[in-house]
Length: 193
Image (cartoon, rainbow, N blue to C red; front, side):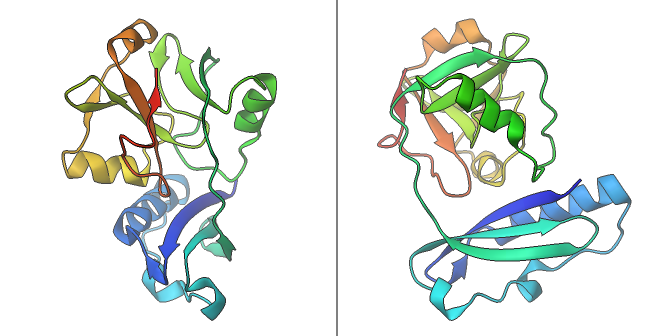
């Protein structure tokens, strides 16, 4: 199966490259026992027309890189979020195939985004990891579907902490923030629960 790495480029600068690099090479090693590292910094040649504003760089790969695209980023506004329970989803690796998430959103047209729970444990949204604010600090579920690069950066810099979060624990939080390579930890962008 093909894997996707989505990287933010802001005004011609690649953001959080070491985190994307590490996740990509870990997936290659896990799935195909690749011992060599692909150096993204040597591969990503940003076209002139993609050096202004925020650009989404899509890297599709298996053992080797198969495709690199640069696309202007389109922000998804999220006003209504809904909690849903699903059967187990295997997304520990960022697969290119994401139809399970598309289907979940189609089945819940009354929401802009979903908080996915599995066996009563909170995991992720369809497009991002989650961070919950309890009035004092931010917590991220210790049961994510995908260990995102922004999530790892926020853990490494101690801006969020991992915590086991069950559905019934959600009432103890004031708001939720969706975090991914394009979405920062932000009180302003957080959604009131």
